[in-house]
Length: 609
Image 1 (cartoon, helix red, strand yellow):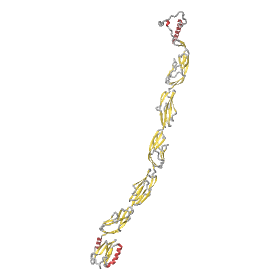
Image 2 (tube, helix red, strand yellow):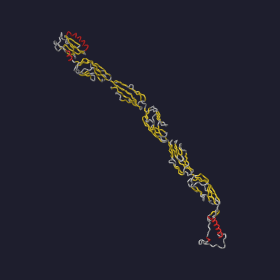
Image 3 (cartoon, one colour):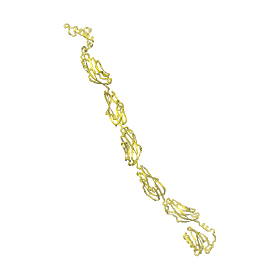
Image 4 (cartoon, helix red, strand yellow):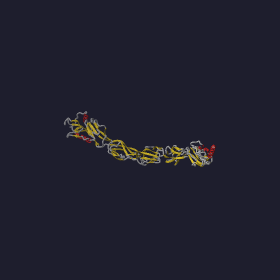
């Protein structure tokens, strides 16, 4: 610096001595002009130039001269305080001042890391490397003649978040279950703190990284503003939180399908999984007397009427969803019990009318009536009332008929018994009660039945050989053996009973009878005239003939079947009256067999043969 000052001094002296300053010029003689272009090296063409190096330390080079330096004053950077962002280059601060510029710059305390004060220009610039609380810094600018100072408050803050990005702007939670929303993506500066407005639902919290987690304890659908903040600022993002019930699952009604009875107390409590049910519904409506309770979905009540088998759809619902389940309900009548008919046994004769027999029972009323097998012919079964009526028409043995009284509660049954028999045999007759039959002659003794039908006929003892008893009670055949008078009992049988009727039957063989009487006989001498006062009739036969008088064609001894007895007539005239009288008594008592008698002649009558 000193040589510059010496050069300036020499230059000033030369200028003064050469008259360049015009202070000592010769007014009488004009100076000779020198063509400096042509003679640039001419001494008169030399111009002394002052440079900055010629200035003293207390001087300021003005560009063509040095002047006395002025003290700086009124130093300012245009800001009294600034807030810088960590990591973000600050806009350089350039000082302004009055007077000559400071030659040296100082700051106290030191600037935040990353910032610098240019010692020549006083410019503050840089990129803050870390956050710093606001601090007042004094900046001093000095030159050779003085100094000036100012203060700036500088704070370095983090970069403010620019935006918040959650994976979804809606958080769906299930009541009483853990739910969460993951850490959001924060653009810009990182967040030092998180806040939410209004407060999150009960049980949820926002964590230090902006994630939301917890167990939702209340239902709701709310909107919230999430704010991410740091020292550099804050940014907001909206979210929506919906808390719903867990959807119900596995709905079940134990005991399904349901078969209920009128008057029965019913309580069926369902089971289900998942969240609490807030609403219960059923379609179609339950049978009369039954209710679906909203508290627990139970089916309660007392059915009051019959309801046919039907499907019902029960739907449960909460804020989380709905679920349906199908059940089957059948409301049945009270079962019919103690079904009975009085009487229940019908032992009838043909033509008997039983009137109307009405059943009795306990419990529920029957809806339908059935009987199996069908009732006997002539009887009717009312399928609406169960009444039995009718008249016995056809014979039959005991039959059993099951009657069912049915309703939706179930069947009840009882048994009816029927037997239909004939009227006892009656009004049966034959042409007579005594029948003398001729051997080896076909006969028919017809039976007349003006009473009920006869099922079977029997005879005891057995009829004479050759005779049979027909299915209508008649006797027919050809008797081939003679028999005496035998009493036969003819039995007429039907379901109403049996009747025994007595007939006397004898089979006569006159030739055999005659042969029996003549066995061992020869000629007989009567003590007088023979008298043919002899038995005559269907069953009479000759035994002896006279050899004189009347001739051999007139029997004087005859035999005959008389009623259920036998008679032999013989004798002379004079014995005839007495014998007649004896024989007459016999004849009157036992038969209608007559005597033939010739006037004036005698005869003899014998009986008991």
